[in-house]
Image 1 (cartoon, rainbow, N blue to C red):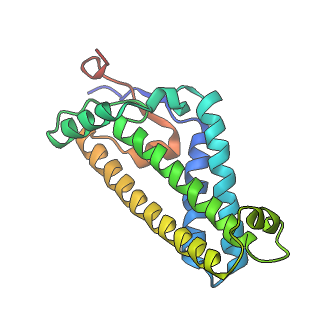
Image 2: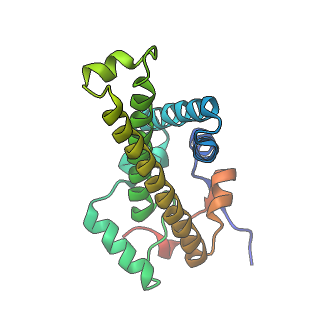
Image 3: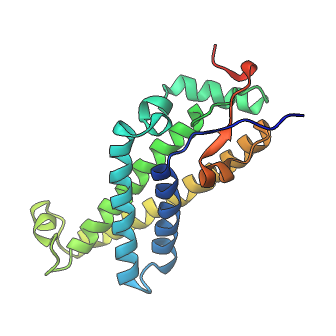
Amino acid sequence: MGAVNKIPVWDRFVRSFHWLLVGAFFTAYLVEDDWLGVHVWAGYLVFSLVVLRLAWGVVGSQHARFTDFVRRPHEVFDYLRAMLTGRARRHLGHNPAGGAMVVALIASLLATTMIGMLLLGSEPGNALHGVVRTLGLAGETSEEALEETHEFLANATLVLIGLHVLGVLFSSLQHRENLPRAMVTGRKRANRPEEEQA
């Protein structure tokens, strides 16, 4: 059996973004209010990374671009059906379900961090306090609502991460490739002719 032909798929930015985001999210999630300063700075890092990823999704390398992996809902459901029957086509970049998960995670993280910043801005003296007052979100009732929303979104993001990990493991087994390692090395096995898109 010959050597497996591995080709570059995930660029350095995508790989760095992915692992920094994992670290920043779990830091913010685990320290919560115990170390508020660490929680806040980890949240700022998550927000900054997501904004950079949005930009990279437009101007980045081929498999980093949204045009490469964002698919219509029916394509995502068709892929999930094929996956459950063991007939899902292998993709070099994100498969349709993985692409949908990227979009869901970006939206969830963006919402979580933005609500977190508004919550922080509800404190007088904070740089965002004027924005919070202008939006009519100042006051104890609004602060409680923001806190509950922030917590809910953080937990929803954790559920999405769990589903993402399950999807990665399932895909790794189905296509006999180590996807977590590919997100470290940036390289994946080249498609065989039978795996190529029709």
